[in-house]
Every structure is written in C-alpha cells, then in structure tokens.
Image (cartoon, rainbow, N blue to C red; front, side, top):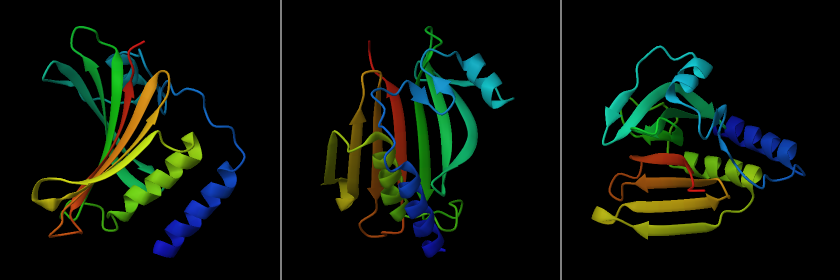
Length: 172
C-alpha cells in the first residue's frame, strides 16, 4: 500500500512540475474568503446546522482525501461578521477511529503536495512539547492567506498523534 501512495505522489509531482505557483491564495477548495456559512452549506450540500463556540460559528463539512490522506474539515466565521475566515483540516492517527493506514508519514505526504502546489514554505520548525511530544510546523504565507500545517506526535507512542492543516484569511 505504501508503494501505491509513493507512486501516486510521484505522479502528482510530475503532473504539477512546471505549473506556476500562485501569487495569492484566496480560500480553500471551493471556499473563498468572505463567503457566508450559508453559501458554504449550499456549495457543499451540507444539511447540518453550524454550531457556535467561543465567538465562532463553525460548520463541519464532509471528510476529504488529500493525496490519499483522509481528513476532517471545518470552516469558521467570527460570530457577528458571518464571513468565512478559516478552514481547518485534521487527521488523527493511532486511535481506534483513525483510518487504518493513517500515520505520521501523512505529514510528509501533505507537505510534499503543498510544496508542489505553493512552493517552499516561509518557515519550518521542529520542537519538543509537553512530555517530549514531537511538534513540526510548516507555514506558507500569501497576501490573503496563511497556510499552517502542524504535526504533533507522541514521544512514547510514535504511532499516536495528529495533523492539522489550517487556511486562515489574513487581515487586509
């Protein structure tokens, strides 16, 4: 299965080679910054209602696969403003509810895809967190958007962790 994933990555690299990198990113997938929660619900055919939490209106979208990595998706708008300003994708690995092949290697798969799409990141950092957890962050910046990807991996149980990929509208 790993060979299939590597083959898919190689094919993606060849397909994306030579394509021009974007000067700006104005959202994620079909979501553009400034859309309302209602517009996103309509665009993605989501029947569930958004929830309110910590001054945010949050809407869960259907899970997606990005370069073979299954990820949950949530969009958010500040309460009162009503306009989408972030998209969060996530993947947990090592849990009974995690996809069977999910693991820390998915971070590298997603990083490679994002480098192909957006070019090299503005910043990369590897640190140790609480209980010596491995924390890797990669940041791409654009005039309208920041793209932050973060891996947190247990030091004592390396097959346990999470990956977050966040697209955030920057203040204009």
